[in-house]
Amino acid sequence: MKKAATQSGKTTTVKKKAVPPEPEEPSVAAPSQGEQRELFGRAIALFREARFAQARELFEKATVGPMREMGHAARTHARICEQRLGLTAAVPSTAEDHYNLGVALINRRDLEPAERHLREALKLEPARDHIYYALALAQGLRGDVYGAVESLKRAIELEPRIRAQARNDPDFAGLLHLPPLATLLRVEKEYPA
Image (spheres, rainbow, N blue to C red):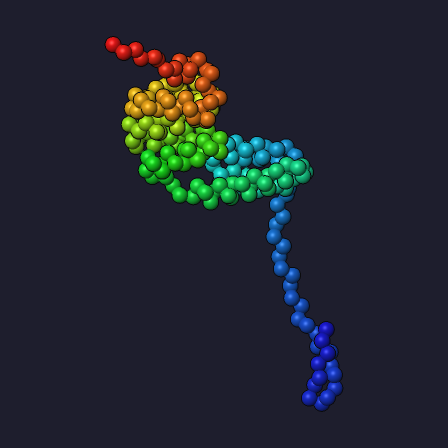
């Protein structure tokens, strides 16, 4: 209540108008432990597929719930999604765009999305040795040795110097001991006729 002076000099008490309280927003119930675990699991699957917008949404839902450690991990992953969305906001349209994104994904070891972008690049420009080379690397790192051999074989057909490049590439170093790749990259001694 406020006190206010009147014209006669007397002080009177003025009552404030009662303001109705603002309606409360309906509270969203926190997920149960099982629901939180399921949200987090689905978000991780989307994250691995580089579907960062959808993953972020589920991670944000998984931040609340009874498992605090999972909530913290969900917050961390949601921030990573936001960062990656900033990096991958541009939609690739050319073979070179898909190739560059594929190589960036290989460097982050996001191999399945990398392979998808490299295959898309090859649809747009099917005779590019460097795209086959990157695809071979993604396949080899993912464990698809025979796919890697086929892609690398095609890269070598297009550009024979790729054989030496692969032998000396540190990214391929862990794959060179595998028999199919070792055979493909073996140097045959050439004898003068």
